[in-house]
Length: 107
Length: 113
Image 1: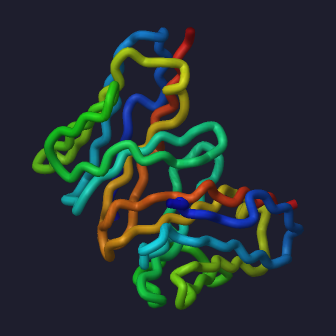
Image 2: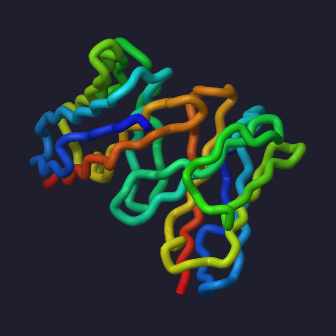
Image 3: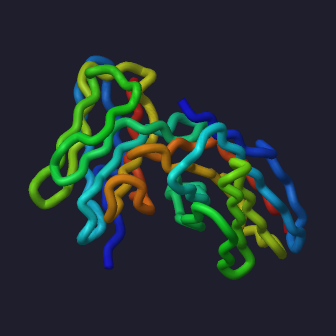
């Protein structure tokens, strides 16, 4: 089956810093989603992005489907950005998740 | 509009018992999927249903079963519970089959003792 790898596994930032999270996948996919999981377990949709670049406030995402990777950019990080970020690829009729990046933003 | 809802939020069961988890999709969504998330890992696909038909099944034992009702809500049943079934169970709904953007509910946290 398809493999989804996220890096880095852990990231600690000072408030106000910028960061880039990466997602690599091993096969062609129909689409890709980025999620933020809050401490209570809720998965919050960030981006639904098969290719190209999208922006939403301080967050933006870029997917290069031909090279099988996606990037999530977080600018001017805030403590509320802390949590786990998941990349998930749409593979057939299911989402295949990476292992996530744990982000900690310190004030 | 209400998002995906799940019940119960927390559940404690004993080994060998069975459990039923429930999910109501976003209004108008006909696809419901179930995922299991154990601590420290990403969610793993269990089932997908669309228009009351099973469209996909992940690598889970036959103790796991699900169904979708005419109103598109869904149940996940797990029989003969094992300690390893302790996890967060997530339900997602989508308007498309396959491949539509999926929206997740808050999850049911199951603890098996």
